[in-house]
Image (cartoon, rainbow, N blue to C red; front, side, top):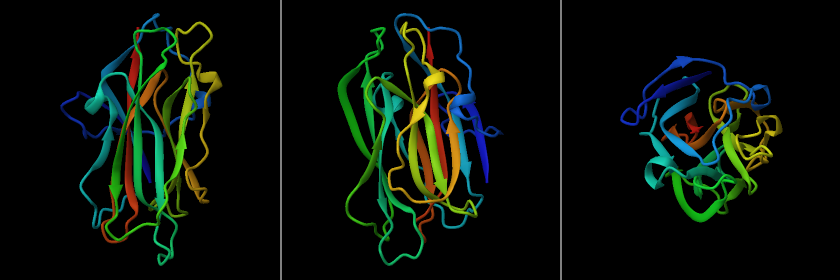
Length: 228
């Protein structure tokens, strides 16, 4: 298993970067303060988990909040559907996400109420009915994902979202107060943290799944800087 972080221009969505271990949100230091209004960079940093298994991989499936909806949209909600009851292993067989818009022109960076819900992938082999969802609280901003993977690090079993509030002055994200949602399903497994760099927010993800077994083998998040 390896985690890769890379920075790339908008026109090169899947450019590979150097291999790094993603840092825990609690260990990241605050970047310089932001201004009273907010902008989100068009340039993205990608952080990837890869099982190393390449057989039967799907094309890239994705949700791109910033690209498809606008600069104020971030990935705040994820829903997971469990594998069919006939499957012996526990895994996510379908995933959807919600992009929510934040008002970048206001220092308190509130939600505008605009949302876009999308299916990220759905295994043709089936899944159980009923989405199991996880979402960040209001007045917080997504800063990465945590995955549960199987013991051999070959597929994703579950997912939750890291988040942070603003600081008291509304000038930066308060990374010392970072937290995370509950896992969508509650499956046991090994933890993998995909953290955005300091003062960056989660604006989308890409994944590839095994078209035969239905399991997610590669998952990559998109992070973009909040800028003065």
